[in-house]
Amino acid sequence: MELTKKERLSYIHQLRILEALYPDDADTYAKQRTALEEGYALHYGWMFEHLYDELSTEQCREVLDILDMYRAITFSLQKLPEGDELRNHHHVAFSGFDGNNETHLMSYARYYIVDLNRYSELLPDGYVSFNSHCPMLHTYQAMLGRWNSLPDRFRLSRDQLATVLGE
Image (cartoon, rainbow, N blue to C red; front, side, top):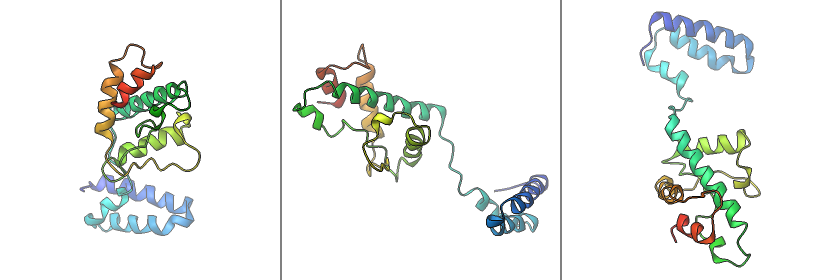
């Protein structure tokens, strides 16, 4: 990472302020400030290592489309009789995204559902990690393709549910 002297000076002043405001974290800020003051370019990036790359608007929208689809699946499943085998299909519950390969998508789903308190019907009782432990995006994209082709996507019949789930 390259920073101009002007950028470094700006960060240095900000870090001095943070050192004063947050004494518990002052040591960390002081070390970052020292790296900037003394020009240790290797360490500039350490100030930003906790920041994720951006998730694009399109990627966010795709996650929300997947959550919408799962909302429709969840509410439509509630209308099926208790013994219907479709209730036990392995894709009826939103299982999240792969923590190793789809980390940003997993984090965004958690943020949207937990932090923003949306789609609470997708949360089972107890702790949810949203880590599916296997890549799910392609599966969800295939399901979305089938779901988007339906006329009334939010009121699914049993046959439409089976179609969306790939049965």
